[in-house]
Image 1: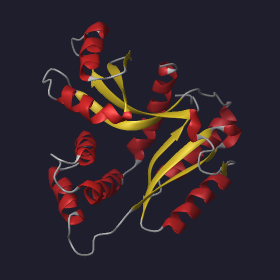
Image 2 (image 1 turned 180 degrees about the horizontal axis):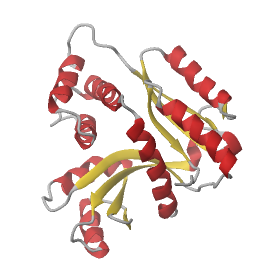
Image 3 (image 1 turned 45 degrees about the horizontal axis):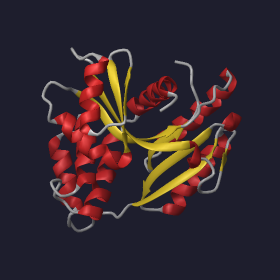
Length: 242
Protein backbone atom coordinates (compact mmCIF):
# COMPACT_ATOMS: atom_id res chain seq x y z
CA UNK A 1 0.00 0.00 0.00
CA UNK A 2 1.49 3.32 -1.01
CA UNK A 3 1.43 6.61 0.82
CA UNK A 4 1.69 5.37 4.38
CA UNK A 5 3.87 8.19 5.65
CA UNK A 6 1.51 10.68 4.01
CA UNK A 7 -1.47 9.02 5.67
CA UNK A 8 0.27 9.25 9.04
CA UNK A 9 0.47 13.01 8.51
CA UNK A 10 -3.23 13.20 7.67
CA UNK A 11 -4.17 11.04 10.66
CA UNK A 12 -2.15 13.24 13.00
CA UNK A 13 -4.02 16.31 11.82
CA UNK A 14 -7.35 14.55 12.11
CA UNK A 15 -6.44 13.39 15.61
CA UNK A 16 -5.92 16.95 16.76
CA UNK A 17 -9.38 17.83 15.54
CA UNK A 18 -10.85 14.77 17.25
CA UNK A 19 -9.30 15.88 20.53
CA UNK A 20 -11.20 19.16 20.34
CA UNK A 21 -14.56 17.49 20.10
CA UNK A 22 -16.08 17.65 23.56
CA UNK A 23 -19.10 15.79 22.19
CA UNK A 24 -17.18 12.64 21.23
CA UNK A 25 -19.28 10.54 23.64
CA UNK A 26 -22.45 11.79 21.97
CA UNK A 27 -21.11 10.80 18.57
CA UNK A 28 -20.07 7.35 19.77
CA UNK A 29 -23.47 6.98 21.44
CA UNK A 30 -25.09 7.43 18.04
CA UNK A 31 -22.83 4.77 16.55
CA UNK A 32 -23.85 2.40 19.35
CA UNK A 33 -27.52 3.08 18.61
CA UNK A 34 -27.10 2.32 14.91
CA UNK A 35 -25.07 -0.83 15.58
CA UNK A 36 -27.71 -2.16 17.99
CA UNK A 37 -30.55 -1.39 15.58
CA UNK A 38 -28.74 -3.20 12.78
CA UNK A 39 -27.43 -6.26 14.60
CA UNK A 40 -28.90 -6.53 18.09
CA UNK A 41 -27.67 -5.67 21.57
CA UNK A 42 -25.35 -8.65 22.14
CA UNK A 43 -21.77 -7.77 21.20
CA UNK A 44 -20.93 -11.49 21.09
CA UNK A 45 -23.07 -11.84 17.97
CA UNK A 46 -22.83 -8.27 16.65
CA UNK A 47 -19.35 -7.53 15.30
CA UNK A 48 -20.22 -3.91 14.47
CA UNK A 49 -21.28 -3.32 18.06
CA UNK A 50 -18.03 -4.90 19.26
CA UNK A 51 -16.13 -2.49 17.02
CA UNK A 52 -17.98 0.53 18.41
CA UNK A 53 -17.49 -0.63 22.01
CA UNK A 54 -13.75 -0.95 21.34
CA UNK A 55 -13.75 2.57 19.93
CA UNK A 56 -15.67 3.85 22.96
CA UNK A 57 -13.20 2.29 25.38
CA UNK A 58 -10.25 3.69 23.42
CA UNK A 59 -11.81 7.13 23.91
CA UNK A 60 -12.22 6.49 27.66
CA UNK A 61 -16.00 6.40 27.48
CA UNK A 62 -17.31 5.08 30.84
CA UNK A 63 -18.76 1.58 30.74
CA UNK A 64 -22.00 2.88 32.27
CA UNK A 65 -22.44 5.19 29.29
CA UNK A 66 -21.80 2.33 26.89
CA UNK A 67 -24.28 0.00 28.57
CA UNK A 68 -26.90 2.74 28.86
CA UNK A 69 -26.57 3.47 25.15
CA UNK A 70 -26.99 -0.21 24.28
CA UNK A 71 -30.08 -0.61 26.48
CA UNK A 72 -31.67 2.55 25.14
CA UNK A 73 -31.16 1.47 21.53
CA UNK A 74 -32.43 -2.02 22.32
CA UNK A 75 -35.91 -0.84 23.22
CA UNK A 76 -36.28 2.07 25.59
CA UNK A 77 -39.25 4.18 24.54
CA UNK A 78 -38.30 7.48 23.00
CA UNK A 79 -35.03 6.29 21.50
CA UNK A 80 -34.06 8.17 18.37
CA UNK A 81 -33.53 6.49 15.02
CA UNK A 82 -30.42 7.78 13.28
CA UNK A 83 -29.86 7.60 9.55
CA UNK A 84 -26.41 7.18 8.02
CA UNK A 85 -25.56 9.56 5.19
CA UNK A 86 -22.29 10.26 3.39
CA UNK A 87 -21.52 13.55 1.65
CA UNK A 88 -18.66 14.21 -0.72
CA UNK A 89 -17.14 17.37 -2.08
CA UNK A 90 -14.12 19.54 -2.62
CA UNK A 91 -12.50 21.92 -0.20
CA UNK A 92 -10.38 24.89 -1.20
CA UNK A 93 -7.71 24.01 -3.75
CA UNK A 94 -9.61 20.94 -4.90
CA UNK A 95 -8.95 18.94 -1.71
CA UNK A 96 -11.19 15.85 -1.68
CA UNK A 97 -13.42 15.61 1.40
CA UNK A 98 -15.73 12.82 2.61
CA UNK A 99 -18.20 13.50 5.45
CA UNK A 100 -19.88 10.63 7.31
CA UNK A 101 -22.98 11.58 9.30
CA UNK A 102 -25.58 10.07 11.60
CA UNK A 103 -28.69 12.20 11.86
CA UNK A 104 -32.34 12.26 12.85
CA UNK A 105 -32.95 15.08 10.35
CA UNK A 106 -31.38 14.51 6.93
CA UNK A 107 -32.46 17.89 5.54
CA UNK A 108 -30.88 19.79 8.42
CA UNK A 109 -27.63 17.88 8.14
CA UNK A 110 -27.38 18.21 4.38
CA UNK A 111 -27.95 21.96 4.68
CA UNK A 112 -25.31 22.31 7.39
CA UNK A 113 -22.73 20.34 5.42
CA UNK A 114 -23.41 22.30 2.24
CA UNK A 115 -23.13 25.58 4.17
CA UNK A 116 -19.73 24.56 5.57
CA UNK A 117 -18.38 23.75 2.10
CA UNK A 118 -19.73 27.01 0.65
CA UNK A 119 -18.45 29.18 3.50
CA UNK A 120 -14.92 27.78 3.33
CA UNK A 121 -14.30 28.08 -0.39
CA UNK A 122 -15.35 24.57 -1.34
CA UNK A 123 -18.33 22.90 -2.94
CA UNK A 124 -20.40 19.84 -2.07
CA UNK A 125 -20.55 17.35 -4.91
CA UNK A 126 -22.57 14.32 -5.90
CA UNK A 127 -22.26 10.85 -4.45
CA UNK A 128 -19.09 9.18 -5.72
CA UNK A 129 -17.38 12.36 -6.86
CA UNK A 130 -14.34 11.80 -4.60
CA UNK A 131 -14.83 8.45 -2.86
CA UNK A 132 -13.08 6.65 -5.74
CA UNK A 133 -9.89 8.37 -4.55
CA UNK A 134 -10.05 6.53 -1.20
CA UNK A 135 -9.87 2.94 0.05
CA UNK A 136 -11.85 1.77 3.07
CA UNK A 137 -9.39 0.11 5.45
CA UNK A 138 -9.16 -0.96 9.05
CA UNK A 139 -6.45 0.98 10.89
CA UNK A 140 -5.19 -0.34 14.23
CA UNK A 141 -2.55 1.67 16.08
CA UNK A 142 -0.50 -0.16 18.72
CA UNK A 143 2.38 0.76 21.00
CA UNK A 144 5.79 -0.38 19.83
CA UNK A 145 6.81 -1.65 23.25
CA UNK A 146 9.55 -4.24 22.76
CA UNK A 147 8.47 -5.43 19.34
CA UNK A 148 10.61 -5.01 16.25
CA UNK A 149 8.87 -4.14 12.99
CA UNK A 150 9.53 -7.68 11.71
CA UNK A 151 8.01 -9.21 14.85
CA UNK A 152 4.90 -7.03 14.64
CA UNK A 153 4.61 -7.72 10.92
CA UNK A 154 4.61 -11.46 11.62
CA UNK A 155 1.99 -11.15 14.36
CA UNK A 156 -0.25 -8.87 12.32
CA UNK A 157 -0.05 -10.91 9.12
CA UNK A 158 -0.80 -14.09 11.06
CA UNK A 159 -3.91 -12.32 12.40
CA UNK A 160 -5.01 -11.47 8.86
CA UNK A 161 -3.69 -7.92 8.43
CA UNK A 162 -2.48 -6.57 5.09
CA UNK A 163 0.44 -4.41 6.17
CA UNK A 164 2.28 -2.82 9.08
CA UNK A 165 3.90 0.60 9.06
CA UNK A 166 6.36 1.79 11.69
CA UNK A 167 5.78 5.34 12.91
CA UNK A 168 7.67 7.17 15.68
CA UNK A 169 6.32 5.40 18.77
CA UNK A 170 3.63 3.20 17.25
CA UNK A 171 2.89 0.61 14.61
CA UNK A 172 0.02 1.26 12.23
CA UNK A 173 -1.61 -1.99 11.19
CA UNK A 174 -3.77 -1.94 8.06
CA UNK A 175 -6.50 -4.45 7.26
CA UNK A 176 -9.14 -5.02 4.65
CA UNK A 177 -12.35 -3.54 6.03
CA UNK A 178 -14.00 -6.98 6.05
CA UNK A 179 -11.18 -8.43 8.18
CA UNK A 180 -10.94 -5.50 10.61
CA UNK A 181 -12.90 -7.03 13.51
CA UNK A 182 -11.09 -10.37 13.30
CA UNK A 183 -7.64 -8.76 13.25
CA UNK A 184 -8.44 -6.34 16.06
CA UNK A 185 -9.79 -9.09 18.28
CA UNK A 186 -6.75 -11.27 17.61
CA UNK A 187 -4.45 -8.43 18.64
CA UNK A 188 -6.60 -7.69 21.71
CA UNK A 189 -6.14 -11.29 22.79
CA UNK A 190 -2.37 -10.77 22.90
CA UNK A 191 -1.78 -9.34 26.37
CA UNK A 192 1.62 -7.98 25.33
CA UNK A 193 0.06 -5.66 22.75
CA UNK A 194 -1.47 -2.30 23.70
CA UNK A 195 -3.98 -0.97 21.18
CA UNK A 196 -4.12 2.83 21.23
CA UNK A 197 -6.86 3.25 18.65
CA UNK A 198 -8.73 1.21 16.08
CA UNK A 199 -11.29 2.15 13.47
CA UNK A 200 -12.29 1.77 9.86
CA UNK A 201 -11.00 4.73 7.90
CA UNK A 202 -11.15 6.12 4.37
CA UNK A 203 -7.52 6.27 3.25
CA UNK A 204 -6.61 8.42 0.23
CA UNK A 205 -4.79 6.72 -2.63
CA UNK A 206 -2.88 9.93 -3.33
CA UNK A 207 -2.48 13.18 -1.43
CA UNK A 208 -2.15 16.86 -2.28
CA UNK A 209 -0.14 19.52 -0.47
CA UNK A 210 -1.96 22.88 -0.49
CA UNK A 211 -0.19 26.18 0.14
CA UNK A 212 -0.54 27.75 3.58
CA UNK A 213 -3.47 30.00 2.65
CA UNK A 214 -5.39 27.08 1.18
CA UNK A 215 -4.55 24.94 4.20
CA UNK A 216 -6.14 27.54 6.44
CA UNK A 217 -9.36 27.37 4.42
CA UNK A 218 -9.33 23.59 4.43
CA UNK A 219 -8.72 23.51 8.18
CA UNK A 220 -11.62 25.89 8.73
CA UNK A 221 -13.86 23.54 6.74
CA UNK A 222 -12.68 20.51 8.72
CA UNK A 223 -13.28 22.31 12.01
CA UNK A 224 -16.78 23.41 11.00
CA UNK A 225 -17.72 19.91 9.94
CA UNK A 226 -16.27 18.13 12.96
CA UNK A 227 -17.93 20.57 15.37
CA UNK A 228 -21.33 19.57 13.95
CA UNK A 229 -23.08 17.05 16.21
CA UNK A 230 -24.42 15.13 13.21
CA UNK A 231 -20.95 14.58 11.69
CA UNK A 232 -19.22 11.40 12.77
CA UNK A 233 -16.08 11.37 10.64
CA UNK A 234 -14.36 13.62 8.11
CA UNK A 235 -11.71 12.35 5.70
CA UNK A 236 -9.59 14.29 3.22
CA UNK A 237 -6.55 13.88 0.99
CA UNK A 238 -4.56 16.96 2.01
CA UNK A 239 -1.20 16.89 3.73
CA UNK A 240 -1.38 19.62 6.33
CA UNK A 241 1.45 21.34 8.18
CA UNK A 242 1.82 20.36 11.82
